[in-house]
Length: 261
Ligand SMILES: [Fe+2]
Image (tube, rainbow, N blue to C red; front, side, top):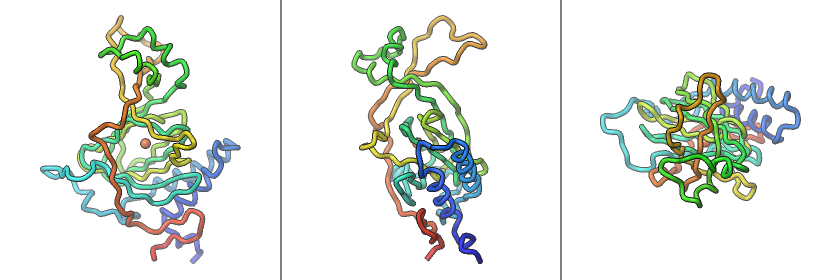
């Protein structure tokens, strides 16, 4: 059997992710889009079973959902200079709060359960404070909070399950998002490119959506979409992420190996 056919699906995904994201920003948009399309095709096929995820987690919501331990855990699979890959597991009702991936692409593929993902497009920070000068927030903002304002637009709100294809986030589109497990526990495979690196300006920030005081009736039909104002906040106290071992096939993005040993 040809060697590539022996590689696990997750190994093929890792190799294709490396191939897709090894130069960022992409030097050739067309070539990048072709590589990205191949990666998305592979991600469409991946299922929890391919990663040996515990099938008990796939059962529906228990009568009294367990709330011990972290609401979210992460299984690290691999990381290179150009991408990182892992699995997030969410307890029933758990929510990864509104956060960003500055300058990064993201691909998210649900492995089991159902998640609601709300995405916003973050506009440039420059000018946001001045543009918000005439906006009345409810409750009112402190002067010092205005420097942490971000002007954004709502992009999407989708319900995704394992039957759905991957969700793509780019540096400009859907980069600020929150992910909530609905109707039971959920898990998704997550690829970030390039990986978080605070020393390179790629740190995670958390946000909350500000309420704007009611004004004269809002936009009419055909009017441009109204901006949403986000305020950068510390990591919410009810959210933290634990870690647990990855039980799936060995992954080596740079190498040929990939079958379970
Ligand atoms: Fe994210």
